[in-house]
Length: 136
Length: 274
Image (cartoon, each protein chain N blue to C red):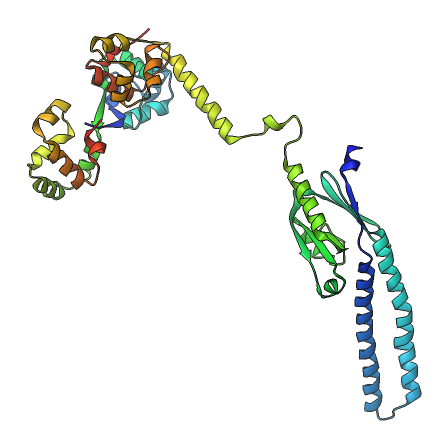
């Protein structure tokens, strides 16, 4: 599965739980408020030291609990209407449910449940290349 | 001293006098013909043609003024030629001109916009050329004072070979646009600045890397993976892995995720804050 080069995060929820403002959190870590803003927006790829510092602020949480990666395919599937998704899945020959499952799937499940042919067909129908969506 | 050695001093050709005199005489001749014709028509129209009156008018209004103007103008052009000189210096062109009022125009190369070589009808008869040096923002002054040479626009008439001047000026413009001696490496260069920024960015990343403790090497060796194989799987240059193992690089979270995935462990197992 190919993931986006930016990470999503739960910082906003965690921060609100601890009653911290963006500025307070930024001061604790030693970055600018904008960095926190972009992290919450999910359009940033923080360095590992910053990530560790953030995890430290939130009671040494595991990084996976704060930051998670989204597959490239998610945004593409999101932009499609239900009719389009139904059309694509019928063309590929799988159920719509199976197509939407691609949003959140581990590599093992991907290899088990989908043939390479199916994935290539999906990529073609989504106007992307196979490598852009599934290899990486 | 140095400046004078490099300077090129030039004057204008003698043909300039011939050309201007011819031009002037032609103009005077036209005026004379016009005046004589006017007298003739006038005298015929009022009905009493008097040859003596016509002769007198012609003498006083045409011939005598011509006899005065022609030599004076010839002298004027000769004087103009004598007084005209241009010097191509290191940083600017100096043009000296003027017969009654002496003028000295200094045109810095920085201000020169274009050089025009003009060859008019009379120029072609005598094979001379006029070089016009246009400068930035000359219009306001020179449009008010159209007369020759006045105003900041450089004007060098009567040249036999204008390309010598043109090439010299071009050469000088090129030289004056070069950085002065000893300052060559202080000139602002965007590429170098970008490179400096890049280096300082890398250095700061490396310094942050000192805060991290990593066990990439151990985990990698456990599954019998070489650094280059790991780099290939992760999709980064081999150096990145080397720097990471030496603790000289602070990776991004996405890169850390990728490495953890390839090595089949969590990020916390891979990296620890010191």
